[in-house]
Length: 428
Ligand code: NAP
Ligand code: HSE
Image (cartoon, rainbow, N blue to C red):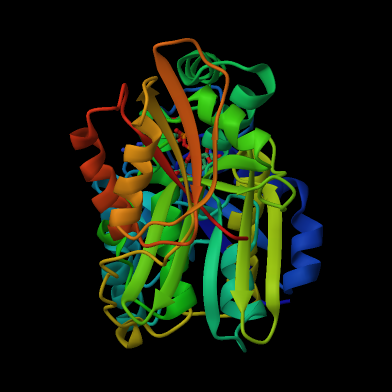
């Protein structure tokens, strides 16, 4: 067997301690599978004397993650601190400059600096890998870069934030409001320290931007993700969508079109009987569509100690075996800068419009939609108390521009009694 592969781990929180445990507990299995003994030599975190539920006394300690990244006895720098800039980026750059391979779970850093870091690693002849950064334990990066290497990818979509899926499914199952379930999830520690990263869709958009790059050979373009969080999803819409055979999900979709690259993270209706529609709780699901393979559905834990550490070990095992794959599947300098599509792929939409309950109100709405070229597929007015009449409309496939034009005209009808809700219906 060749020399041991030595890990320096910066960050000993949920994921870092999980990695330490697997490396210890599965030492023989990992050695047998990779042909190399894998060991931790040095670690770093903010607080040295914290009880982390794992014995770290045999590892060297560094207060400074940059110093850890430069250590002679470290072959792979494992970055598990988080944050798009600061110590995570400084230590990753230092590790590459010092000739180390890097494994990270840090989607925020890669969504912003992925292209530059991938170029840096390649220029230095090192690899930078990030399986754990997208959908936790689901091996979706590997599936795209390796398993589907013979495919033109047409679309990638999925539920990539477990906390949002927990909130939406809990709202539906318990009949609770967004505010009630948000407070519950926060109390249970399900949300990021900055909950906006979850409910604002930012965390999921980071992941989507990384998958776009691999799927379409494009430079990571997080700023081009059309982003809408789940804060405005009402229990009323969840109920009405369910009644029509749909579920509301925070859905990420990336698709290369003739108009450019579409990257969208927003609450959408999906058929309740589809795999995505049936996804409950904090689970993630990613759907990959390729020309040769058709559709592949991956489902699993998107977060947590074991699942995320499992993904980190997948990258470490690859490096141990000598498998050296470019960060985004193609040499970084071959990745193209893809223009962002200025308009979405046409789709049907769900509309909930609160009308004043008076003669001709519905006709005015129908006229505004018709004048904008938006055709109604289904419509119904459900039981209500005067003076407000709630109306549900499902449109035929239309463009977002046409729909927005109609929505902009609606206030002029003088018959609205609340702001209309418009949600895209995604065929999956
Ligand atoms: P965490 O529990 O908050 O742990 C972060 C660790 O980094 C802590 O040990 C902390 O030290 C250390 N740290 C923070 N700033 C540091 C600094 N300036 N110098 C040295 N150490 C520093 O975070 P986590 O949940 O393990 O997440 C780690 C990474 O994995 C993040 O990029 C996250 O997005 C990603 N990720 C997490 C999950 C998940 O399920 N948790 C899933 C997928 C991806 P102290 O312990 O001393 O404070
Ligand atoms: N907050 C994230 C989630 C953690 O809920 O999916 C994993 O990125």
